[in-house]
Length: 180
Ligand code: ATP
Ligand code: MG
Image 1 (tube, rainbow, N blue to C red):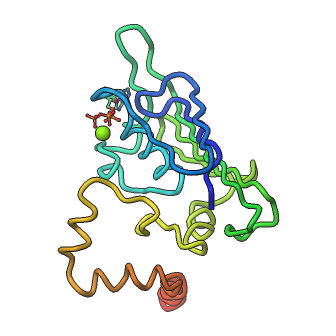
Image 2: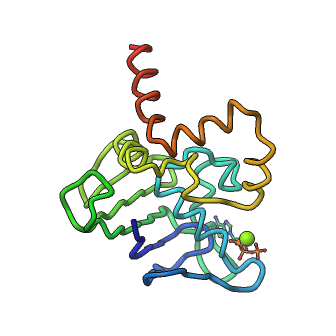
């Protein structure tokens, strides 16, 4: 399912609203050390529902809000939107384009939107899990992940195959039902 556009505003080093358009094929992002390449992949993970501040290299989720610089005052919120081409309906929604947005305020409150309609984090997560693109999927392979997969315990590796086979979603639903 192709990514079309990533819109970053106030996330980490992106104080100005920044629009990244993805053409078909492979997109490479290049730049000097510290220029924000990793911040871009973190923005993608964050808008897709990442809940661990540590995995975004912060102590607290609020740390992802632009903290200010020598020349700019800090921002009071961060907002990221990811737009998918959904004409093949890989995401279980009728629309041919799906925009997913996440916002966070300095007080720590987060808001989530699918096509401008406010939803719960849970709804956003299940949209991606259904499409085999949850946070633990191989949709995003970060530094060190290849080694981690190769060296993981058999039971951890099993969950990777379960996700690829599309059964992880049902397992999660079963666990939720058992807790209720
Ligand atoms: P490398 O090539 O070394 O991997 P990179 O291009 O991946 O570098 P990033 O790690 O994405 O760079 O960006 C790091 C920069 O982001 C640092 O300059 C850091 O100060 C800045 N940064 C991180 N969080 C914030 C924040 N909340 N507010 C402002 N700037 C931030
Ligand atoms: Mg980096």
